[in-house]
Length: 483
View 1: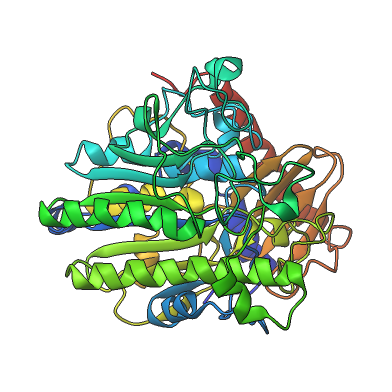
View 2: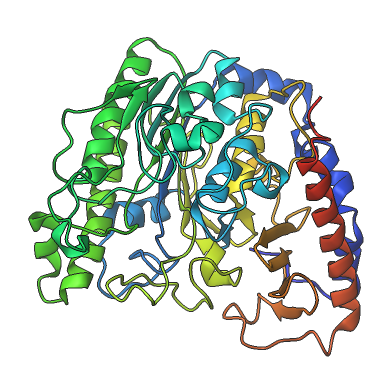
């Protein structure tokens, strides 16, 4: 359970801890005992990062959705760790994906929004780090961290118009790829669907799957997009298992991002709902089905016990301006593009039978920037020359039941929005830090009661920490982290 402070002095002491000092160590929790290093290095876990696209905190059965069927995610929530406060790195797509692979906030390296910037060569991705440890690495699904072609017009920026942003997964540590630059329809992904056509129904959608330089995929691209993605991920996993080689599989689904389309089979599950809901719920259930397929394959191969299988969403649900989407943030305020909880608090799950033998719920704030340091900690591996500061922390102590309170707050910045979230309080500004609101998330997860006026000292200290963190990100953007 989240630590509930006995008094404000306890909270102040934690907040006063130098945020930058802890970050500069490259995640202090990586400094672990030598005997543990040896034990963990001997049994290298497989790592699987699954992520939905625009799935809200409330878009699962286990979080209380009254209609949506997600039996496989529900089973994961009962069998492993369910993170009640799991945060995407940003309230939009591309920045969160960068945080997953680097452990660093995307404002450190210029990925401020979707279709903005790209993964710099100087950053060390999780795939690049694990390759040094003998891992096979594969990326499947949405990339959104740079363009994939210099010659062919593709998606939002690909081709000659976006050469400066060419940064495909195969140049960022991935051996095997089946990747798109950005969104595709969630059913028949290469074809513009009728319901989103704007007069272009049946034409090529314009975003392609790529498997390498100038290698555009043309086969097995009909039907449910989540199944199409998993059709590529599973052979990669099978081959790694056959070779007895540990692997990293990054499986980033497009569902339920626009254009939201479900096939007849999954729409039929929701035939009593409006058409838009049929498609939205249907494509999430289709994705859930593929997660079940993945878990079954891991068990068949006998590698499920020592596989870290993570699941989350890249941000909250799409906003109400798209009336044909039916995403839910549950009781949380805000949606995609907002730094209120509904924009960044997302479903978060971990299955790892070798280490998580007793199912439980974790209320400590955790997030996508924690993936990198957690995996490094699990391997007992410290990467020399990696850019620092690191924003994430290792969750191995959480997984082992030894940590219930986050040692450093989580900083966010997106456009004019900035915020800082610790174990209890959240400080947030929507005008670039001119004015602030303060919420007690333990008592008010819906962020309805602004406590800033009655708690000026907490605001002052959290604001100081936030200002230091933002200054650190600005220094990073200047190239100061690259040695």
